[in-house]
Image (cartoon, rainbow, N blue to C red; front, side, top):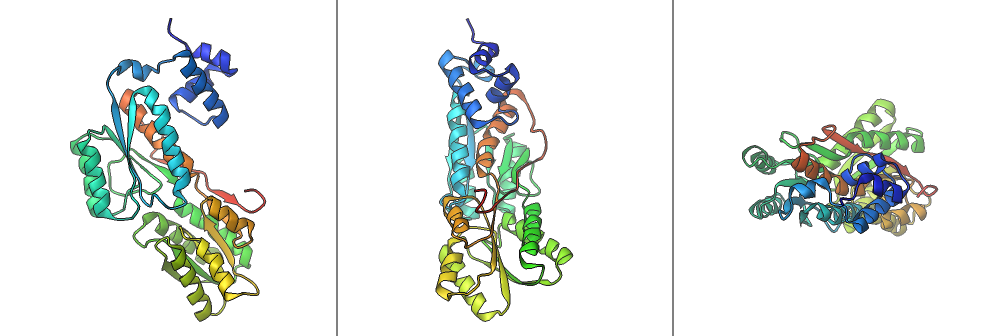
Length: 339
């Protein structure tokens, strides 16, 4: 006899609605509760309705990432791996193409490889450029392949939705924090990763706009690209602090943030500038705990990796569209007191 949701709910000690949300990945459920439900369902031999419709037929969903070795990708990759394990129970395979760089040629090649392997849908961290835009529109329009972007978005495409932080809004939040730290006066150095990154640019734009609006006494001393490299962040910090007097704030929107502490140590500053960084990684947690930075803004990378494959699976299996075009993750502000 077929296992029912009610039977799973009784054993898990939760409502039928909670089981339904967990098994269909709709809404938020405590991770430990979801894991208990998945385990009970598997032990009882529960077969998801989408799997019943597609017995013996594997569906392939492609995933393309970038900067795969960067520390901020740890949580995103963890979300992708968990989604991969859970989707196997629905006869869905994730084919993951990890890219270590921000290189449009390599990203296009990765997309083509996935298309040649017969993917039915694509989740991608896109590089915002015309060739990638044209390729995604070709897949969506000509091959009817649904697309979800995550972490970074790309305008002018026929993707279903975007999953990630509202980066412009997070930049505004950072400006508000910096204004409180500095009293709205002084000079702030901004360090970005790549000028070609729409994600980085949105954070910088939001920060600059809000700073000019609310804190006219806080001058933008410059925006420099570090290519997410620790050594380059250190060099930028050292050169700028030595050559530009009055820097009392640093806003770093991308990777390589360990170079900030190295520069402070090398310069032997009596009083360091106020510092705001991004992404809750083990290295950045240490930066906060060691008093090198004041605030850390986290973007819930796990959700960004975990959610897109399920949105695409639900669309493929039941025609269920995402609830909205922009599925923003929380802007989480951390200090050494609430890590």
